[in-house]
Amino acid sequence: MSVKDTICAIATGGMGGSGIGIIRVSGEDAISICDKVFKGKKRISEMETYTAAFGNIVNRRAGDQVVDEAIALVMKAPHSYTTEDTVELDCHGNAFLLQKVLELLIAEGARIAEPGEFTKRAYMGGRIDMSEAEAVMDVINAEGNAALSASMNQLRGGLKKKIISLREKILYDTAYIESALDDPENYSLEGFLERLDKNVDEVRSEIDILLNTCEDGRLIKEGIRTAIVGKPNVGKSSILNMILEEDRAIVTNIEGTTRDTLEEYVRLKGVLLKLIDTAGIRDTEDLVERIGVEKACENIEKADLVLFIADGARELDKNDEEIISHFADKTVITLINKEDLETVIDRERLEKLLAANGCVPRILTVSAAENTGREELSSLIKELFMKGEAVYNNQIIISNSRHKEALINADEALKRVKDSIAQMLPEDFYTIDLMAAYESLGLVIGETLEDDLADKIFAEFCMGK
Image (cartoon, rainbow, N blue to C red; front, side, top):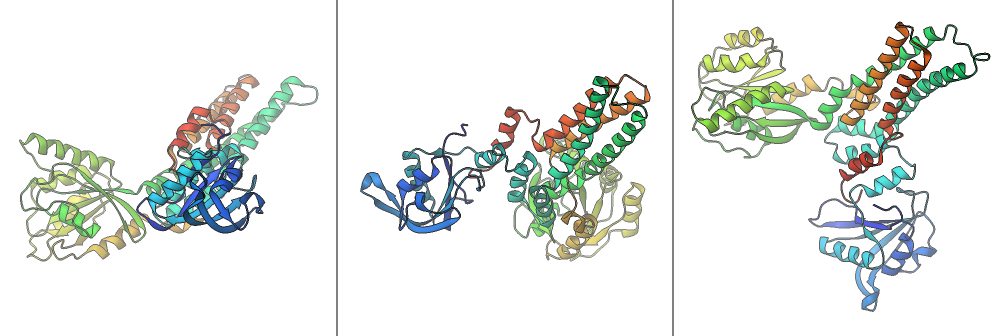
């Protein structure tokens, strides 16, 4: 990846056809290259920055044959997304046509951009830091209001400002220690250890606040991992289809139909769920089904939410009790299915079994056959998981595992500073760990990021961004 190259890519999503398809061109030769394929009343090189012109995309090697009508948008360096000269060509959204325009640009000297290369150039040009660059993809992939709000906060520099503030506090104390060691006549360390101990506590407290948002960040970014469990033939797959409002899972009256997990995403009243339909849990001699049962138990352990499906037309049995025993301290919603049939299940006993395993009894009656209960389930899930939704508008939420790791490492380094103070170790021990914390925090915003890691991060971006 060379930053001297002029790059181009389709910047609009999908290749199924749309009204408009945008091709982005960026680099020192972007304007001259686009001048060779775009013919309007003005040459692109004569246009002012942030202006647009209507014209034609032409193939000059075929006698200026018109390929498409288009609008050219000009953004000159350094005031563009990449900080480079940038031209965006708004063409018709035909995938074949856009490919033809790309071929013309490549013939004139551009090359296809690698995934994330436009944003990487914005990062290398100093317009955004690494946390803001990563927020770009989070905004693109946001699946709900909470995820979008958290991503936009980060994109606007909320996390960057916080990290810079913490690093400045650490750097000040480090510089003071170094100055005192080099020039003890003018800089005294008398009483400094008490002040340093207090400052470290303050920084660690702020890091702890950020780390405490990681679980919320994971849920709003990845969705609530929801395991649908129950014994065979209680209607788990039917419940999945009801929630999705489509026939996604195979449904039969034969026990053991679902032998592996099936994963789907759905949004219920603004809450993103990652639904996992599991095999019916029971003792079985069938090897394949037994593997499915083991996976179901694993998914209960990993789940943020368990949807326990009970058959309202059958009494509770040992199989139900065994399944409930896996729910220890989990967030569980019990759905008594088949309310369209005569109900024989003992609800009071069910509540006691759940409570005995550390679960708050949350029980709804539904009918997958008649498609009833979805609204009540949606409302209950929102009540359980969206209590803090309003906070996300202003709060910094850590949803990136790389950021979490860097914050943990910084906190551990500061803890070592605290230990050194408690043991009255020489001052140079403090500076080593203070700088370790400073560098770990720098990883969040890319200040101390190695090139290969930066390349890996941007390689995960989508094309054209």
